[in-house]
Length: 300
Image (cartoon, rainbow, N blue to C red; front, side, top):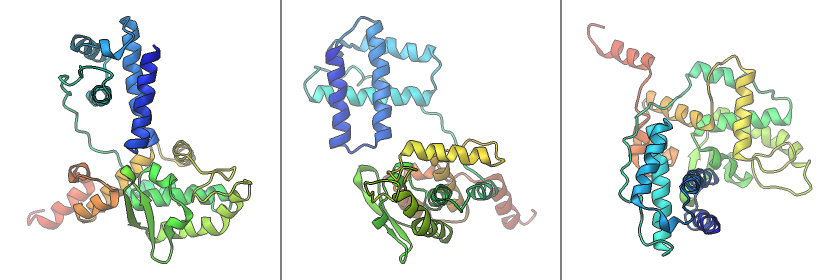
């Protein structure tokens, strides 16, 4: 399976260097391709060039029998189609066997978000007396207050924060830069962290980092660590909900639109290339819907 490994590694380098994909995106691609490579091994096929459309159909049946969701199957097919297109372009294979594979229609699910009362509970958890508590509060306020992605949050440098202009420079997908406004609560949390907690964390490492958020060793914080931090905040709160950095992004967009923000403005803040990506957040909560009804209907 040496050829298979070489092909996969070549594609991973392409995603990282030429496509500027995030580490999480690359991880998902690799996971999907390795899953198919494992299936190939079971079928005694040791080269991607030997993959046929018949084998692809067999793989889709295996995915169906394994009860994968439509969204997961669609993602796997999309990943493999891109991978085989790359191999075809590099002339490692003569055709793309996934070109004819149809994507299952994705199920449309409303994004999971938190209510304002739930967010208030989260904000009351972190201890503001120690460096890690100050850092965690700043992360929580920033993620909710701006709707940025966790990878964007971890890539922020100290110089990217402009406290006087109340903005943060964000490096988005495809290395596209955008300035996002930062609210008063997030600004207060970041200022407290910069003036106290970050100075103490920075002193724990002999190599000084320009990253805004540092771990307990004084090194740049990773996306995985942010997810761990949020899980601990949930454990310390009385909430029985699932939370992730993306749930906070969903919450930001939902609350903005529910309060009357313009859809295109939210698109710009989220860093979406297409408006259709933002439109998924145009759902409204039952409370908001009832409020609109009571205010608008003459017989309410």
